[in-house]
Picture (cartoon, rainbow, N blue to C red):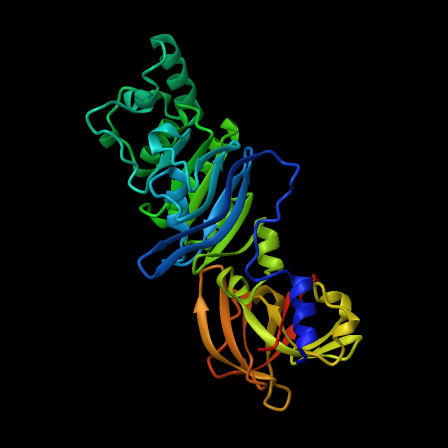
Length: 378
């Protein structure tokens, strides 16, 4: 591939070391500008810039050790950046000359373990951070939040009397009681079982949206990030790879890392002749590949395909273009990993009743009716 093609591809698709290009007209509540934080020889956060808007729920997503928790700590005031600036509602809370400690920032925190006070009632836990108000104001605020969380009847109970989901709701509304400018959530669902985790995702989002608070969550769980967030910021090795709404992130990833980390992904090699792209699973018109232009004529590229973009049909050896090499049963569906004759590996999603044997010859065909992401062949 020519150097010119590589530059043009990056220009069209966006840099794989992108900064936040969110709407400048939206009111910014939290901003990190060129923030870097290192520990000894290791850089945890590298020149990271990000804006979070009024009322937005943004999730920092990435693998363990990518820098997302360090980013949250920098926002909370639990750590200080080496370089760069952190702002909350336009006020500098950390830079080369100024550092505002956590208790002087209008920032709420929700931890993994909830950190409820076992010797206090539910109502007293919620009221803990607003003791500077009048007793009437405290009572009204606690009543309002417990009703919002569906916990009014548990006001006099101790935390140990509650289920895990109820305890999480108490911890959430306690952190919301002082009406912080921004709420930070550190892996908020990690200590809940799978079924409760899914339920609480929706409950937490409902409560946050009802109060209108701006929130930033941290997780390594892509399903969690995609299901609760207005936007998702993917971080890898301390760099911001991409920030976008969940559906944009999934359908139009700007880097291979984002494509592979968010959702199950496979790639098929394609050859572009200026009008169509030939791949081992079918031909595509130019308008089917996001951002592809005729100037890339005679270029080799890799097309991103998800399990729901493909179907595998059992056929004889003479018609097959691949073989099933792995099978995963998820309950509602099967996920088949297929090795194509070209050497490409793809995943095909099928109904739970369509059970195919391993090593079965299949014909894989493209069924997607939407635009597909692509990357220069490595």
